[in-house]
Amino acid sequence: MLAFSLPAPTGLAFAAGGTAAPSNSKVKIKTGKVWTMKGPVAGDTLGTTLIHEHVLFGMIPDDLRAASVEFAVKLLNDAARVGVETLVDLSPNRDIQLYQEIASKVPVRIIASTGSYVYSRMPKAIQNMNEDQMYERMLREVTEGIDGTQIRAGIIKVAAGKTPFTEWEQSAFRAAAKVQKKTRTPIATHAIFEPRAQFDLLVKTGADPKRCFFSHIEAEFGWAGRPLEQEAEYLLSIAKEGGYLLFNNFGFEFDTPWTDMVFLLRHLSDKGYANRILTSVDCNWEWKKGKVVFEASEKHPETAKRTYAYMITDAVPAMLKAGFSAKEIQTFLVDHPRRFFSGE
Ligand SMILES: [Zn+2]
Image (cartoon, rainbow, N blue to C red; front, side):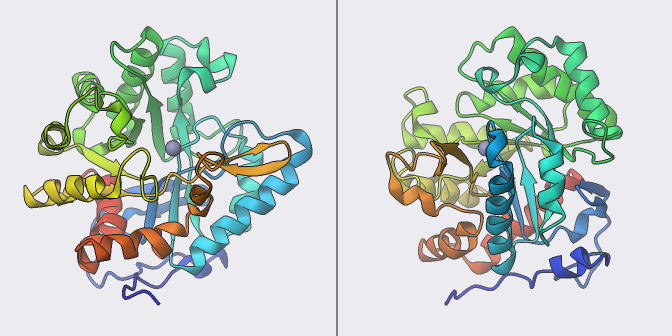
């Protein structure tokens, strides 16, 4: 059993049509509304939150739509069972009909995203957009709804590769920053390479650092040769200016050895910036030859264990073992997501 207990899930009350009650907060914290797939909720009711995940990822073959729903529902119910209450989906170009079906069957609140992922994985329609068109689409999806539904995106996702960023990437980042400036919608980025340059571009265009988080910053192949200590300082510079850093390489030794991940988390904490740390799994899987394949699991079969629930069943115990307290871990999974969505 875990020597760690997160707040009891409130999800079932939510699924039954009730208003999700604050899970563990006796003190009401004033926060704005956050748009989930089932409508707006108060920011202080998010509870245990996985802030960078994928309900579905990539192309869903027509003959595997039902199986996709079934598998996603299973993973989300497993997550609910171990205490996950809210999950942020960072697939910004998703099939909203499938998502609706999935969301209706699970107690976990899902926050959908708009925006874009890496260029090569986007459909032509998004690849061909200029900055104004990106802006219009993002704005529409956060203020009106996604693809003709009333489901609004609660977060904007953007992605870039190595510097110098392409024109298309820069357009996406600028469009996201402008939509945030207008609507306060938070931004999550795919930042394997040069998160600092992404941070500067967003902030220069008007984004609020406290409403931006940078993902995959711990993937060592993205460090441009900077050694661990230097990388820790590089990342600290983002935290010092208010940006959030997302760590998700739990059980991903080949990209980030666990000792290095602990070093980075510890470094940020020791320097007084634990409040900029977010943690999640980035669970994503695709169909290959009719079989579910989790990210990297063909080469590294152990990564097939990295479901949403893995955060609680494996990553949390690993952090406890590495010396982080249950209180610290709770801030990563509960308090910081709530603060991020309220811009604190
Ligand atoms: Zn992801």
